[in-house]
Amino acid sequence: MTTVSQSTSRLDDAAESAAASDVDRLVDTVRYPLDGRDLPAADARHAAYWRAVEEARTGLRSDGCALLKEFVTPTAVRLLNAEIVAAKPRTHFSMQVINPYFHTQVNPEFSDDHPVNTFTERSSGFIPGDAWPSVCAMDTLFRAPQVCRLLADCLEIDELHCYDDPLAGLTANILDPGQQFPWHFDTNDFAVTVLVQPADEGGLFEYAPGVRTATDEGFEAIGGLLAGGRDGVHTLDLCPGDLQIFRGRYSLHRVTRVAASSQPRHAAIFAYTHQPGVIGRVERTRQLFGRVLAEHEEAERSRVREDDLLD
Ligand SMILES: O=C(O)CCC(=O)C(=O)O
Ligand SMILES: [Fe+2]
Image (cartoon, rainbow, N blue to C red; front, side, top):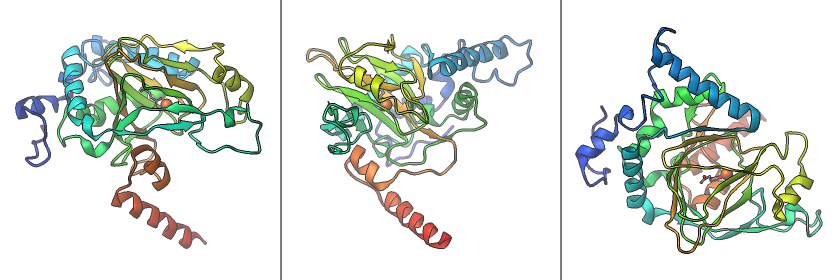
């Protein structure tokens, strides 16, 4: 078990923090036996593990989305929410008007009513990776090798690594009353999300699978959805503790506006990469978190140096 660092742990109760470092206490291991993967086939935990993986694979193959219902136990959900509430003052809220590609400027090459020139308010915020205590349930779930292994199996990839970015690796998406995260595409291949505190009204995750492909921008379908069309839109019935694996590169998606009278919506977001040691670009980091760290600047400088060597 990892020891609690004196200077960085900001949980009220160190004992609770130490307990949270055990991933088996956070996950419903009866339904999702993390150790079942390599047990003999006759073992019920082996069967349960691979049943969950197969179900997730079916969802990911058909529409780029898988739900591991109630993956996180109710007690652990309360712990995650307490950690989010404690770190919430560090949220970077940015009110921006964006198109589905996160651009904020008009592109004169397209008509005024084109998706590229259709801008919608994004008012939600992210708690950055450096706001969490070094030992906490959020971090344990994010980094647990058994969870990474399960996610890689669901995604049908050989390996997966925690996104090494000190701000964008482990975040929480916060939508306070009245806020929304409008229709957009993600730049990463897949996202892993755990709903921790749902809104009482609004705050629904909606997506339209496969509206674009690697070779077809799908502008017509996107235009229809931005204009309020509902063709092919799925609305997820998410409960606290559900873990969602989502391929958002080709599926337009959004979180609808949280009602003014609602409690805030909190979602834990775990970012992974195919390669180890990946860190975000300076410009994108500034857009999402309002700042960059020395690591980002350094990574950008070594990129330049690498480019120089290749020339
Ligand atoms: O909060 C969520 O459920 C997902 C938010 C989202 O789409 C994103 O962070 O790109
Ligand atoms: Fe997204």
